[in-house]
Structures are given as structure tokens and as C-alpha cells.
Image: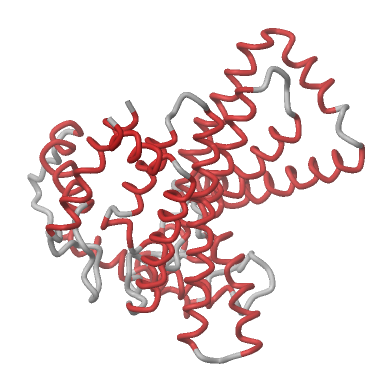
Length: 360
């Protein structure tokens, strides 16, 4: 019992969490220093950032044929990530033309977003209440040591930024739900973060909308039909200048959201802009991802019938996801695993029962 109490106190402590942050940072730095730009889609991200770094505006206008090798970048649904990340790159270029140092700087910036996100997630879970600190710390450790994710913090990608933005949204969401009154600044900040997140990575809309709908539902449960009047009155508590600035920021972000994912969906049939509809099939063949899928599609038998969603999830997607979680990425290229390291696999799969035991 004494041993259990000592272990539980240790795992529940802030120092254990500091260790998790240190481990995440060490892994990210190691990957950032050890790998060439080939992790996940890092090469694609870097190429797009470099293109945006030569333009002052986030709107590229008509697609330059010289950009076709990265796809329809002029209508990219995740354009805001590339545009924003281009500014740190421009700053680094003032001091050095060394491409490796420029890439390393961007990697460290992305690593910073990831580590900050871990800290905010922990704070959100603690404020939610009823979740043991040991369970929270172990869950974050479990996430950090997952081999398939280990490279992510040290690579240039929009997922780290989304990871941080959603952690902050989750924290604000918890505060809103636990509050007995309406927090107008919190709601506006949530809306702004959600809009930013949706143009940093357009698929993040799937995170933003459910959270915002739940908070709306929670407010309705608290205030019922009086919600519109109470909401209107709460906004009057914000100083006029602050309210004007906040509403102006919301309007700008709504405009950016409509200009890209919404307009893409309406004009090109996809929030990310279908390549062949943006620049034409012939030019799209210069884009590796498109040409590979086109070649696979061309070889598809005429009598091909896809599996139904349930069969696909059980027979294909499930096993591949499990394998990916415990596979260590190779140095060379793709996100295909080379098989799990026994010690990592053992550590990975012992964290869940240990977490349940300590959390209980």
C-alpha cells in the first residue's frame, strides 16, 4: 500500500508532467536534428511555405504553372498555415541563407506549439474536474511515447498548430461549461480560434463545429429561451473599444473562412479545392499525390467493388491503424512503419492498464 501511494503521488505530481514535457521536447529535437525533410508530408509543407514567403498577401491569385508540382496551392484550403509560417522564415532569412538552419528553425517553432499544447490540454483536463491527476499525466505520457506520433512534434506540419489551438479551445470550452453565467469574451475567442484553426488545416472543421455546437447546447440548457436576451446583455459588459476590435476580428476571420473552404466547396466541390477543377487534369499530373492516385485509379478493374464501410474499418483500416501506432518510422521516406521496437511496444501497451490501476 505504501508503494502504491508513493507511485500514485509521483505520477500525480507536476514533476512527472514536467518529465513528460521534457520527453516530448527531447523526442522532437532528436527527430528535428536527425531526419531529412521526408517525415509525413513535411516536404510538401516546406515547399508551400517557401512559395508563400515570396508573397506579401495570403491570396496568390491565379495559379502560376511553376507551382503545379505542389498541387492547387492558389486555392489550398489550409493556406493560412503556410502564409503565417512564411513570416518566421522571412525573418530567419534576414540573418542566414542556410536552408538547413531555416528548416530547423521552422521545426523548432512547430515543436513549441506541440509542447505548449500538452500543457494546455493538462490544464483543461484538470479544470474539467473528476479526472485524477495520475490518469491525466499517464494519458499524456501514453500519447507522447506512441511511436507513430513521436516524429510529429519535430516536423514542420499544421497538425502541431491545430493541436495547440484546439487545446486552448478545449480549455475555454471547459471554462464556459463550468461557468454559471455567459462569458462573452470567451465565446468570441472560441469562435476566432475555431475559424483560424479551420483555415490552418481545413479538416479541423470537424473539431471546431462539434465543440461549438456543444457549448451552444450547454448555454441553451442553462438559460433556455432567455438565451438571446442574456447573450445580448452580456456583450454590453465588454468595453466598447474591446468589443469593436473583437467583432472586427471575427468578421475578418469569417471572411477568410468564406473566401477559402466555403468558396472552394461551392466552386470546386471540395473545401480543399479539387486539383483537376482548379488547374486542370494535365497540370495536376505534375503533382505527385494526384498522379499516383490517377495511376492507381487507371489500373482499377472495371468490376471493382469497394468494401462497405464496416468491412473496410474491420479488415483494412483497423489493423493498419494499430500497426501504425506501434511502428517506428524509417529514416528514409514514407509513413509506413518498419515494425515495432519490442521495448516501445511493451511500454506503450502497459500504460493503459497502469493508468486505470493508478487512476482508480
